[in-house]
Image (cartoon, rainbow over the protein chains, first blue to last red):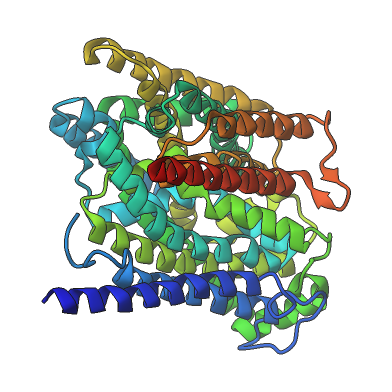
Length: 83
Length: 471
């Protein structure tokens, strides 16, 4: 039982690292030419210029990563348990 | 339209009165009045947090920002909000733990306890007072200029402002935080409904998304990329704004309080994800309204643009709903901020409840009056004023994070450095210190220096602590 908890904690710690690294990388990408290339509108998606649809994708990814983080943070405590 | 305004306005007033009365009946002690009993569920938590975060500046400022500066406005706010919800999950757990350990009446009092030095609370309070009062003022001013344009010749803007503040203070004083949160539910839902109906109407008028952006391309192509037609959205501007917005749950007391009073951690997690979804849901229609404005009202003044798209181009019931929606948006943010300033002051006071609570109520009124005065003298640049508020309060962020995250009380020099940074930023706003230091924006530089200094201080104190253990 204890071993299983420790193993779950280790797994959660790894997943938590993946989540916060993902948030840092995705947020940083929003300030690079990948999302905000100066004066560039193409490629368009559903008529939306690149910065807008890429910005929506970035925001969506951040919310998804937050959702994932709620299941693994803090790694030492089972998130299903109340405080 | 005026008949609908009376009907919807009357309905809204009746609901406000009902929630104030209900909250007043349930407020049995000081904790219930100031912290709504600290047992808030996920749905109420979502709507009160979202209504506090998305304000007049979202419904009025952001469409105008998109219309004037283009799609970079999405990066400015929505991406920052996306990252903010992650911070809620991470920071929320820590601040809730420290609030349980030290007791919580307000962030100022909590910081005084965590730093073992009351100056930490004083500096935090000074920072939020200096930069929240202007933010409250722009909510009031935004609504007042809109009402003045909507009802030309009725009454002047300052009378509208006074009436708004009077209503806000009335239900806040009667029902405390619980009344504010219940009113946030009405206000959040109204705001979301109104922006979607208006945006769908505009998309229909323009013939869909592709047609809308084709028209924008014809009108002003520079709006469809960064840095925008006026060159505002530089990478530095966006990064500085990003930190200002991301740190809001740690730096603005009305939001911090909402993390602490949630029932448990699961509720906090659910609320965080829901706020992220709410941000996407509310900012997309706002983008559409702004882009429509770029096509239909490219050169109009802010107030003319807003009164046209929100009132004169809408059918009667929708125009009335827009007026009420704006009223609710302004009030839901401003009331929370004014009340939070009162709560913060209360957390710095000592003494029995029968003495301190009446003083808190008077302080709330005083802060309301201060915001009213500022709203009369402030400019119409709602988003840029909001940004100054975000970036000003962001300067207390490293101090708050260090206090909450460090096991050992952080050094007082973190507090001193924060006070100096606040002063320098304030001097830059009045033109006594340049806004750029070489190629770097002053606000970004100050935040970076504070973050690096605070991190170094934390590291050194940790090392000293470890060394003492070994010895």
